[in-house]
Image (tube, rainbow, N blue to C red; front, side):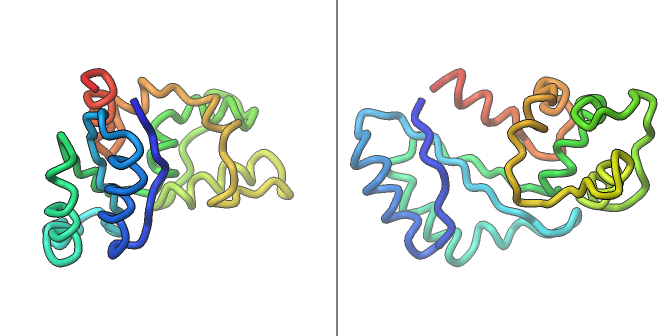
Amino acid sequence: MASVNSVSQMTNSATWFDRACVGENPETAWTVFLCYDTDEYNSDITKFHEGDWAMLRESISPAAQKVVDLAAEADIEDVMLCDLPGVLSFLGLPPETKMPPGNKGKTKLKKLYRKVATNKAYHSGERAKDLISHLDMAEIRASAPVPLEEIDRAVVSG
């Protein structure tokens, strides 16, 4: 399995894939994950099959064995909170701590951090390696609002 980070400029994505991925690893049976944030829980995802996205799919399809859509209907914090016991363990909070109120995972995670200490803040976008090491990925995979099982299938079959 080869992993190649990400690219965020739609206009350059297919060129990058051909050069950096296929060009450097032509023997690889590539599974490409197109990941996008729907921004809202009820967003229409058809827009990710039109325009620039459609051109990207068309451009990478000849070299990709499979193209998988991972539409994120949630923030990463929502995914991490699928394993609340792991988050509580990382923060040193008692296992009986209830999930804080809020519509977004980021808001809930910030409230949990504040329970630990008023000066311990959650900052989105900062390294989360230590937090992630406390999480049960099987638990997250089973209940995440993102089709993570598609990644497992690609890794196992690829």
